[in-house]
Length: 453
Image (cartoon, rainbow, N blue to C red; front, side, top):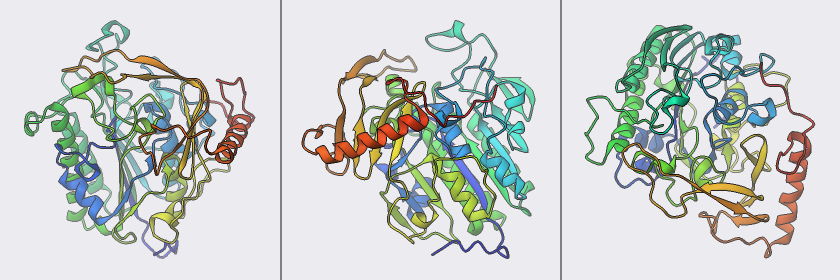
């Protein structure tokens, strides 16, 4: 099956749903034994389920920048998670996914968490979105933070386009309201192609569920929150079906990074994978990803490694949209999704973190971890009821090599056993450092671009 790109075809709508801090094993279709997600499970049964899909970085702002630009976030100067006073954004010289599709006649809307600029010149409506309803940064950046309330004196404001419409004190209805606004956008744009981006603030802490879902599962608040997100997906699918749009709409569901393990019973699970958010071990970057597109995609499970950087070039191919001349890092994964190939287009995937630190590289079945320190609970339980425990810092003292097929948990360092493989990845690392830099080794990077200031 292929995407022919014939202009006579009606361009597909695109719905991109992004959960916040949802772990690999938080859906029943990805192994959860106590969270039931029937709508997402049905998507996985009918569409494409990716089992080696990666967030570009294990942190909010950076991973979102990758989705919207097709670039490693450090290539375009974006690192970490931005606070309310952050005055930078995606440089206007970059072409965002929303701008690309808008240039091709799409209506574009974002309903949820932006986290790519909290000053007006970098609002979503300045970066290709016709409509915005939601919050500008993470939902814990408010005066009720459990550890650092004085760090966020600003109000957490709910925006409609560029206008704040209320201070959020109780976030219980936010998932429901975001879904309502998303459905309204679908109904208002049913007669033209649209790009609907739904980056839910949940299940990032603090956790909130509406009265219809709070306590519903009997498995704790985290399970209630995921159940409500699943129901939100079901409502969006129902709205598409009601308006006869389902067949020609691409729906993607994924997460921005792995679970925030220090929050314990208010955090998700990375399943068998090591560590979580804030690390480039598998648990921090490998997340669920499901794609439904009835008109073009049959059901399949794909275990080839792909990343958030791949959406922009893939959607450009499917919609016949014009990309920027800027160099990007993503690849068109349509041939893989559609079954025309069974191989990823990537020779390697780079995992940077913090401020331009190269922490890991995946090449085929292999992954190398480079020297640095990383955070871990070291076997301890996380916190309870919304109060986290402190991480400890562990060192990686020398290059470590893991075979992710034989050892997906990254427990057995085989660096000395496979010197040729190790050398191949180390050469890739040297090339990456020359091109994009690496603060850990002092490499500057020859091809980094300016952040928007």
